[in-house]
Image 1 (spheres, rainbow over the protein chains, first blue to last red):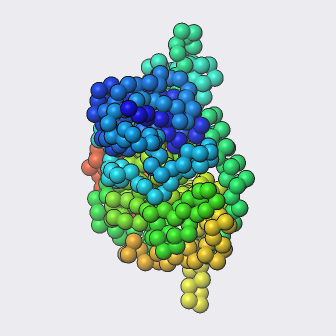
Image 2 (cartoon, each protein chain N blue to C red):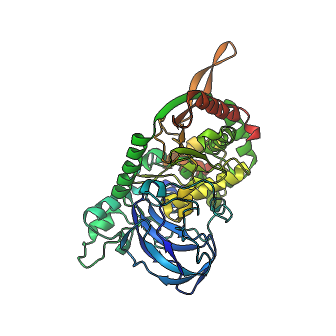
Length: 404
Length: 79
């Protein structure tokens, strides 16, 4: 018999609650199976197990805040006799210090097919179907202020979404158990604050930026999108992600983790993709192996990831797999972003909003779509010269869109 | 398509794409992307859903005509 413990899902996670078991005592589970839904600072996350075993007993009570490492369940078979490892942690992770325990080690990817490339069967945002309550940001805020459980309200908005008016009409029933679902903006903000404070305290950042002409890339994209069905159209973000991943493949000093005073390069290029959550908040689950496969597959993975980040159904492994983070501010975004590295990663790449700017072409000036690509990187691992080469490689990849 | 019909169709489609969006608060002439904080992925998903529901082809070059409910109503009506 051995134990299944509460995994750390990132440098900023200290505790979580089990809100739902997806297995029962006696169940046989395989590596990669989902076993429980956790309520974390990042919202409801499905956690997987990374071994074949039989569930002996479910130990953790529901809806009780537990520290990382707490025993959630006991298991039979599988790794009996070996050291038990928390589910979302690769076996080689060192749980010595909280900081190290939070570090996803890059060496051992989960043995399953990359989940990010497989749209989750039955993914839905139907109210309650996955524990996520549809609600407007205002309704969430008011519900939190009055200790009203959104899940207990009948939403009158589209698809049953809870609107502010529904909260107005509801009385904070003293008997209702407060059980916030979705994500709690205040606790997510605290978690982001803790992780970013650690980053600024520990990581000697340096920053670079380069303006890149996207003319060729966007012309190619427009032609491509005109030639495919509307559902198969690609977003510029997919080209940016692929270009970043390709550049990282050639410049591995930016792809990996800083663990125990040393840089450990990652075996795969798993881009943490920063996704803004409506109502405030940010989460950066991994786009696995973003340098490989077709652009079509990358677009499908991105679409699936964004949907689940906002609608529920992210997996624990998706929060620990990122080897570097990318933020793209999108078509209405600011010109330039100076990222803060997500520890224990060693770099973060930012894409500002794409805007039409004057650009020198040959001897004249032309109007071109331009994006400012920025890099924040860890001086313990690389320096500005290497960073410049990385940005140059991203620019070069974007200048040859057919090869993306 | 009337603006009322467009509004109710868009509300239905957004329920799946951006469940927290409160379309009632958006005026016919307002840019939906700004008013509802839709990003390019949300907007593309809305275009895909509109195409699937109405059968209207929506080339990328026409996207700006769909930024408002009024524009969408006109576009879907003549498309």
